[in-house]
Image 1 (cartoon, rainbow, N blue to C red):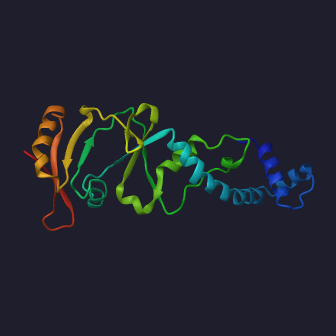
Image 2 (cartoon, rainbow, N blue to C red):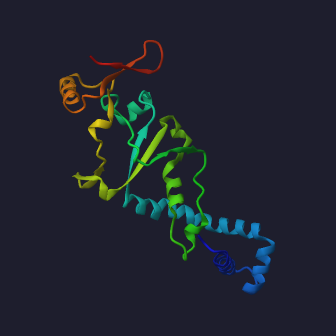
Image 3 (cartoon, rainbow, N blue to C red):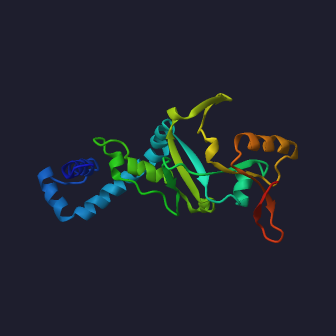
Length: 227
């Protein structure tokens, strides 16, 4: 964490660079002690564009080059998510029991961007902190609140890699024993039904096989167990 004297020195240099008369550093320290809140506010306003540029550029690139994010949801019956993420209700959702060693992050939904430390822009300090990184990763716009999302992070070197179309994709291993439900979309292709039944019986005998269907009167999905 930045020490007080380093902060004052950098703030002093910043104000001088803006052409404001501040006198000697000794004089500035006295002014800072008397008006600390105002000077800190000035430093934050000065750093805001740098922080924004860092988050949108270097942070995203650096984080994406090191970590993968597994995105999960609490709700299996969301019409919007089945539409968005399962090729129009034709795909499959897995209900899993989260292993205790997984470090899960509950996504927070907000109307404003994540507040990050001005330490991000001081050259003497490490760029970014673990707390700031996690806060950025777990915060999304309130427009996505319906997803009720959880996220798990993993270093890329621990994930399975597969080359597709000139890109490298990364996959997390889901052990068969933690799969408790296999849910088919309401438009799951009938020609694949026998195949999926055989797969469930052979590899996931402990899992329930369910299929989504439309509620009789409401705009909603209901999950029915398949025999």
